[in-house]
Image (cartoon, rainbow, N blue to C red; front, side, top):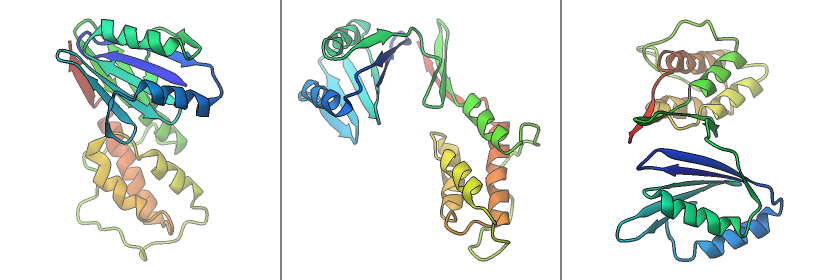
Length: 209
């Protein structure tokens, strides 16, 4: 289990590794800690006082903490440490496909390394970047094009595209709908998305201190 702590006010990130392999028992203990938290959405909990806020996100066997007060975060980490075996691994730079670049002025989250890995899987490192996600005037069809002899690569890449970039959501949704009968023109559309991602590889989210 991994615990990521992100202080929103001072851009402070710490990563902890939990070595307890009994995840079912671990999450039972975790659930007890969260009894007084508000479940905002599935797997996201919020704790709020009159002046502070802490957000906890559960992802499989990973935990992400973010909050407005470093003191409050450290207090919560201390409580978790009493139940889990944790080790401080220092500042985090890469987590779940997201790169974190921190300076005294800001925190920048990008997925450039993840995009490069996808391009590499299709030998597209030197491909020509595309300025748009979809070719003009083209609409994907279930029946147009040649069926792929082995659809596994198509499905693997499309599955890997379902990440946090909201600007590609619609295009990815379109190619996802064709995963059961992928054709060569569908794969061209997937590669078009990758070419767009190469052009916009520096896009990210910036948090100002």
